[in-house]
Image 1 (cartoon, rainbow, N blue to C red):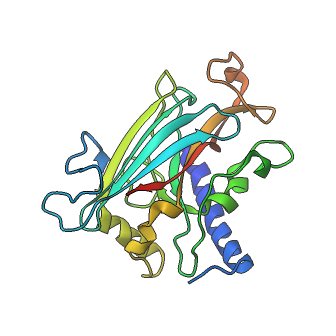
Image 2 (image 1 turned 90 degrees about the vertical axis):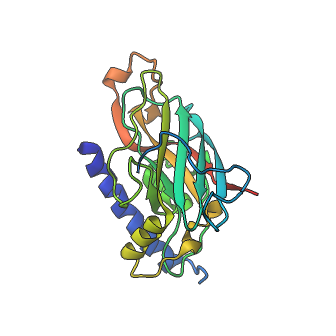
Length: 239
């Protein structure tokens, strides 16, 4: 799939970014959800589980003057499930929209991810993935249809109204094991302290370095950029 080829390139860019970041800065030491079974809002325990649930909320705000907005929720317990929900609007209809949790998971890295200001864009005024990486950090989790394995498979496709309602879950232990396999056995639950992470939504039609609104008749002449960041939000833990 063409989109997967583009995203594999993006993944390689994030690995390069992580290496460059380590060399430049000193940094201290599933399936689709049908329901939210076992979830107890407010940080309670999941039934039959001794570990406390953590819940994170995200307000997704536009990047690149996209008009894309939305919300996201992440819920997890150490000995239970890791679940993600995103609800996004203003997207390019009928197109696949990659979405990720970004953040550093590598021994010796402890950066805090953030959403970039418009000034982070290059001379053309369009913030690319490459220009966002110093702020986002590398890709942490692909919010595709499975979450694990940590690959880039089937991302949600926007409806004719330009909306996405996405949900997926996996075992938290499976996610940590997947990190562990990719990072030489160095990963622990500490790497899922998501208050240092961001969620970014991607994908828009572009002409002359500007996003073309979904309702414009110019869309047919535009190039679809699957990796272009269109919305970003920082994860905030609900206490």
